[in-house]
Length: 214
Image (cartoon, rainbow, N blue to C red; front, side):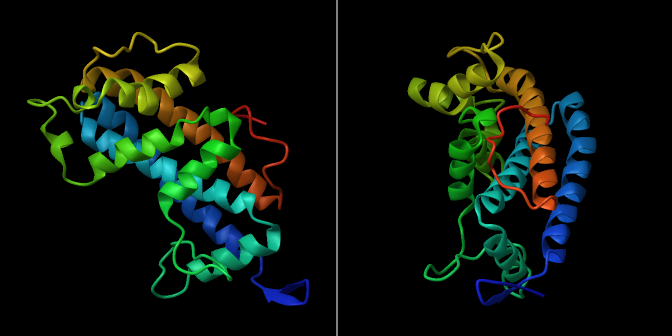
């Protein structure tokens, strides 16, 4: 155990444990994702994308904490009943919501170009049984308003890649997944590796993570 500001906090072994968990899941997702794309399993591909967003958002959330705080938060996340969920620390209470961490990632990681929240929201509709699973009959992309198509998908995608790569308001869900999801997944993986390295090195979000590799 180490002491910061007269408070006993968790040893960095808990950060290492968190990093190993992230790497194990990410490695498996990276092996599975191409198979899902090849076999046109679009709802599963979207679910995998959402899991990768979650991992990145959690890593960013910890990097935004001071070192002592992040170690304490991670240690408590391994407590029975939390099972990896991040607790709010005093004076706060409860659990940190994944959507809040995704929004923080968008705010703190310029390399995301505000794409994490949209990917998380869309991914949640694919993880949970929803109308999106009727995409052969009722296109979930077209079910979005034009404003939502731009806010959640087109504008962030164009900001990251310099264009929409042929996607438009008139695209289909399958077209969006075919074009956007492999690029987004690759980008998330690159950014995640940077974040894990910084966590292991006891670093922070300064300097900002603008590019995928450092």
